[in-house]
Length: 203
Image (cartoon, rainbow, N blue to C red; front, side):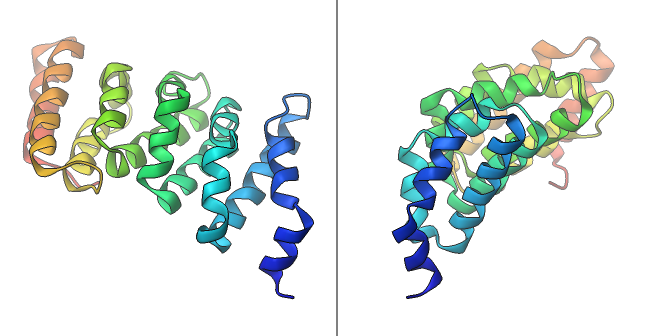
């Protein structure tokens, strides 16, 4: 019997989900469950991805609001791609990720920004729309005053990413520019960010 068979027979994945989805457990315990679950997905996507998507795990991980949990979200998006982002949109996780961009802790903001970038790259139109409607551009404009080119980075990732069709990419860039113009506090700031978005920047 190989390791995969042992894991399946033991029911450990269901136990991890039980811990993860139970707020009665300490946050550190739930974080370890999330990390272990992520490692199982990376070990064998064919076996464990479906269990992650249907078991309430995604909502539970996002709701922990910690650096570790957000790093797990980023890793799962990279591993599962659009289906994971779709589940985040359905369970309200995208709005929570955007909200984390305003966290007091810089580490949480940075981890949330990486999630936003992954969503921009892998997310379908509905998911990227949810980020835009959730105010992500306004928050990135605020963060850009200390984090260089983060608005342009998102624009580039949506343009080169896997989630949007070509015509959707063109329309999304215009939406991003529109939100930039609404969010900027000065003409100089607006001109700088618009130029970065129009001419591109390294993701």
